[in-house]
Image (tube, rainbow, N blue to C red; front, side, top):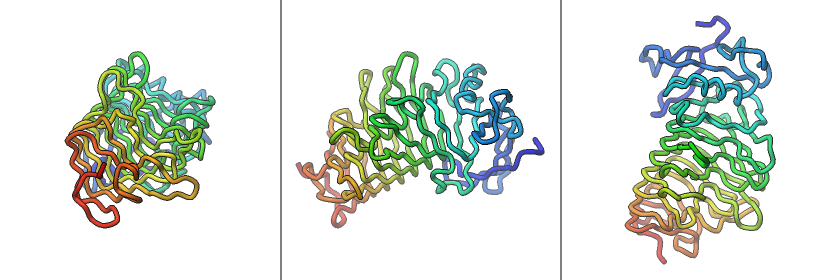
Length: 322
């Protein structure tokens, strides 16, 4: 182990406590594991340098984008990890293309994992551009605060030739519209339906673009198919023009559970709160819904959806009324 490296602790996909060394996961809730077959890159906006190789904290890179270029050059599947030190990162970040580096990992190293929103924050450098574009399958993204520029997104899944963001996992992130941003997460795949995306333990607020266009989560491109087999769990949404509004391109065969939808915000009271119009066969349960629980209140079910065990002015097991 690099003597300059202090093992970092965060949570894995199942919520277990993980201690991470520079070449692999060393301990998961007391269970010692083998080293992972990855090349790890380290990024530090305060202490990194453009002249470094990025292979340890002592030789950290200055930007996340530089680490993404090195990951793409590996040309491997599931063998690149990027650890990002606390600090601010003003850059237009793109993962490698799917043909170059699917199943990578982008991990913010936070002092208090799961709750230290703002320790590692990202905003785009170019007006109107998203903070992060996910262009390859299976990327795992954890621990960041994404701050949207005016009329821009925080994270775009897919969009563009050769881009396929199916299987993306995003957890413990904060999506901040700054009362100017367009979308928190935009499902925009052109090659596939953005299947198997997981969004877990994230918060969304402040999306207000134009008059009523801001959305925490939406789908702007379903030219291939609509988002399918998506899991959204343990998230909260509020203080935006709209919360989850799929604009007639709703989730198919997906699950939305244990989330909170706030009806009243400090600046904005959302119009659409959970609109799965155009979707189908989605299970929506154990959520808390603010405001009036019907179409007029911003709750719209897809075909054959099942909405159950919900708190909406009292417990209900019924789909929202038309």
